[in-house]
Length: 207
Image (cartoon, rainbow, N blue to C red; front, side, top):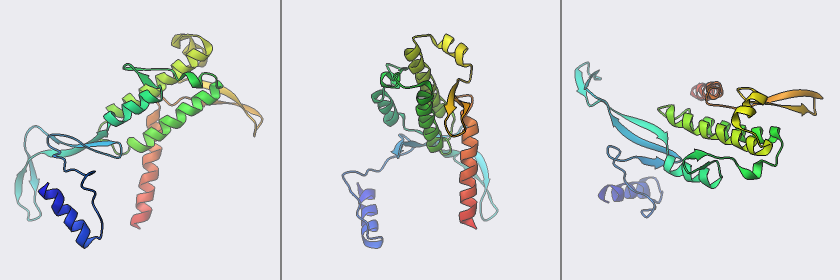
């Protein structure tokens, strides 16, 4: 409470900002995660001590602690359940989407996966959580298509191949094209493009 009040006073008198004390709290990152904008931020203790060179040129032992950022699953999973992508610990079909065309179904899932990858992946420390998230959406798409065609996932992939690719007629060009579902094995190409775009923006700002 003391630290929060000090921060509130600083913001009020020096920056002319008001801190809502009811909605803000101080989180000890060594023992629990701080959840912010869909991310979970915490400190992780590395085994062993490290030797670092200080600004004065003296070698000094460091604690080996570093901040890690992951997806706030406590916030995300209820939303996936509410949208019927994930129920009882498993990816599930979205019944309301099974009436759409194959192209529309894959497009909807690709849009969600692309948004999740572009938002979370460039920030998080480890890949495992984003892999799990893309896996949920990938198999939710499979099961939605399976419900539509009343077939198994095995027969679905035999029909459309892997990665799953659906043909559609492009009205602008008048030709037949394919839309490929973004999967756990293919989304890192999308991430590489996203990180490249972020790097170019950062470079342009620094100039």
